[in-house]
Structures are given as structure tokens and as C-alpha cells.
Length: 159
Image (cartoon, rainbow, N blue to C red; front, side, top):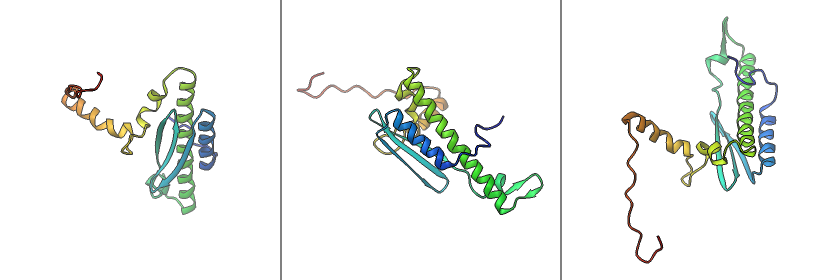
């Protein structure tokens, strides 16, 4: 199966610009992006929620870029393959964000449902970061975690 946008000529910068324009069109009131090492980050605020997507980027020295079926690629050919892989990932992220926003706009889904894994919690982690270990543990032990015990309301407060 071929990856979405595997042969795209759209630059990463144009995809980031498209993501920003899409977010503005659907009502975001903040936008940022950056990169460090092998990942890029896109963040925005919408519906009172901070959302963060971490886009894994390939390693420049990955064998898939430095070699082909006949041996080692030239440095220029390897750079071209790497750039193509980066462009493909940015196009895929633009598609994902646009599809989620359109699902919300069309009434197919709720904002929190579409972006739940990417909502940033007060400690800076995403809901997905927080939930993945809990889900893995629930499957490992075969039961749901115990509920927190209900404490009585402090005196003088409404229940």
C-alpha cells in the first residue's frame, strides 16, 4: 500500500502554512510550531483547549534514505529521499488535522472526542501520554482500575 502523499511536491513549509490557515478558518485563537531533533510539534488553542501534535521525523541517516536495492545512494540522492519523507509526513498531518476539524464542524464528532489524545493537560503531557500506560495496564491485568473512594463533602459546602 502506498503512503498518502508519498510523491508530494508540496514543501513542508507550505503544509505548515496550510495547517495554520485551516486552524484559523475553524476558529483557533493560537498557533505555534517548532522542531527539535527527530520531531516537530504543532500546537494550537481552540474551544478553550490546548492541543499538541508531535510529528515524528525520520532520521537523516536511516538506511531507507542512504541505500537502495543496488547499494549506497549518493549524498544528494539520500538528502532528496529524506526531504520527500519529511514532506509526506507534513502532508499527512495537514490531512489529519483538517479531517478532524471538518468532522467536528459537520456534527459527526465532538471536539474533545476528535482531539482527546492530543489535549494538553496542566502538567504539559497530553491525554494520550497519560492514558496509554493505564490502558496497557488494564489490558495486562484484565480489569479496570479501582475507582477512587468517595469522600464526604467538607462541612459547610453544598453537595
